Length: 354
Image 1: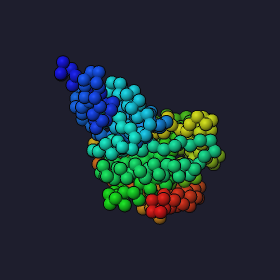
Image 2: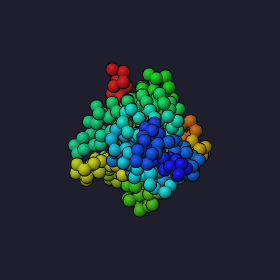
Image 3: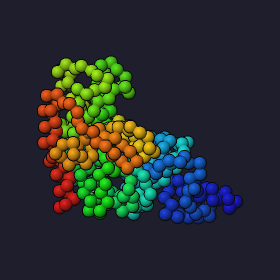
Image 4: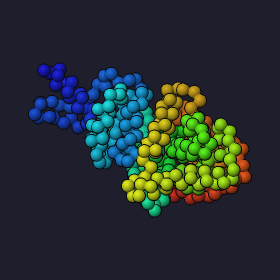
């Protein structure tokens, strides 16, 4: 009977964080640390904002990733329900839920990768900068906890506006004395995913075999697809270039308007976030030649942060690649992107320093 009770208590520990030590009076059971028996040898991943529109599908997809052994799901609301739901999936990752500010640090201790989709979504008529005042504070608070509990973790930032929230994270880590520019990455993978899809539609290709470098930032004109560098090599008319560039830059708005107030690009963002997180985990494992676009501390331009192709490794960003040859259209786009990006970066830096 005792062994049976212990097994049940361990199962319960999947759903509730071990620090709760809740006593189930009816059964006489105390929740104990889950031994994670049967879990794959892999990495410990935390999702901050796991109960949101991006967080839920992101959590589900990360539960399916064989490189994840322990998945911590944190949010200020509804984390226990999402955790219970996802914990029933018959994959090897062990899932634990954490609810509210008082459990944030417990959610982060020992993590290898932290993914941050937390914050409010865009609504019709909103720009990413409209989100700034709310999401900036959220990201600042979460990064303060990361600096304290898992300063060596790779941090993937999804919360918009990414052009500003990544500088916010960097400033928080600098204040705490733990900033490592290799380990703080803004997720711009959705821009690449969209670019690959839209180019494939026009060219009649399989999007999985298309690679479009997208540089700059993650909002409006700061999103610069380098269509001259598409693989496989493609030739576009000027009309196609204008159409593709505009659609890639405004893909998020397209979804927000189509959902008519019911949300933003949550599902495609979750897909892109998992694609990038998986790349980070492959790199942590030691896989060679893991190259993707990301928004990072960079010297590619005169700006302190910029999105371009980077090679990922065990320490995060191991190498940042130059932009390569740009045509006249792309050079003009780059100047527009940099002008807009400079203000967004400064806005993030000033938020922490004020």
